[in-house]
Length: 584
Ligand code: SER
Image 1 (cartoon, rainbow, N blue to C red):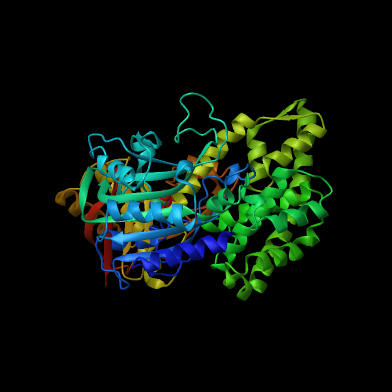
Image 2: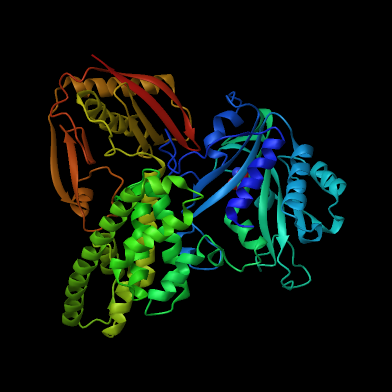
């Protein structure tokens, strides 16, 4: 049995149990700028879990293409993948625990023929938010699970939610015993020693969580997810997914053409190549922000490890073709988009090769400076600048430094990197200004109004009321900002009044380029302070507002219209959202 057989068995099984087979949603979520990639099968189904009617009914099943980016740096070990496929089945207010557990058990033991002794399950132990899940435990016992294979755990193990807010609930997780020796007398499925591997998660979604706590959903749902690559690996008795048919041909080819035999590098190339191909196939393109940046990182990391393996980069087209061939049965769309995938990957690889060349030159400059100053450790800022501005990875800087008898300050680098990561995360989660997709007279005016609003909020509510996100269409502006409670009617009126006063002063809007340090000194508000050494644009509106921003803006506030707040509401914990319009 291989991956495609497992997928087909799964979809057929649930079809026979009354589920409609729906197509995988694209990896890049439609109409949802708040997340980078689809990370779970339930993600595109959220409206239906909340009660909207799904056109295909109350029982659904699919395979979902997923990318999870938190683990990028772990890829290369024996289990982390950025791209993976999740098989899932859903009950939208239809069956609940009993039928769900019975179907899972039947699928695992009858269809996949896993001996019941090799299975263990966990259920929710209960707490102040939800009761102990005795019901699931009882059903597991009924179907034939031995009592000592049923474990109870708390929220950290047996509760599932995507992020901070949304539909959620206790889950029951199924584990496969690899037969490895237990790491000790207390070894159990929550242990990470590798004996037990989680294979399936059934979430009993009957709650909704927001910052105020938990409420019951309109309907009781089931959301399940089974990781295909992992199941495939276990059923084939392999140690890693790289030993299965999904990766083996590419791993073998890499072994054949590599001068250096680094297993981790081979895995990284194989994994990142597949992930990048899948992302490009679904419309992703490399860039410096958000998901484009994730793709860029994947391709760069892959290129670097091809170098490390001593593989001629001109082999890349062949590797892409081989990978498409291997995956064509699972993802026919790869074949259709073959030329685009090749073009995007090769162009990005070429760009990175240039970057590496520039970076090496810049590195030499840093070394000269070090010699002059008689220092032996390259400071974190220089390492970060090489990374951020020249795309020069710190490992490469470290290697080169070592060759010349220098060290690098990784602690300082990591600190700067973390700050940068945090900014990118914020940037990715919320579309900040500068990300205007559609720029016309109206959106430009809204953009300027956003700056006026930001300043007015700080005047009326206080300096804590900083921007947390912004989204502009031709119809309205939407602005998220930090504030712990509801903004009162009086405050809203005051804010409106200030913005309108400024508009009516016919203030000129000017733009200057400066370094981040200079911008900070000038008192500009802004979110990108940590882009070390970069030049930024600062927009000034008369004597009223000064903000770091990519623009564009109106040249004068004259004629922008009358500013009106339409709505003030909670956006997330500690963040409020205002929607406003300009009336001409
Ligand atoms: N949403 C759950 C998960 O991702 C089950 O599909 O594990």
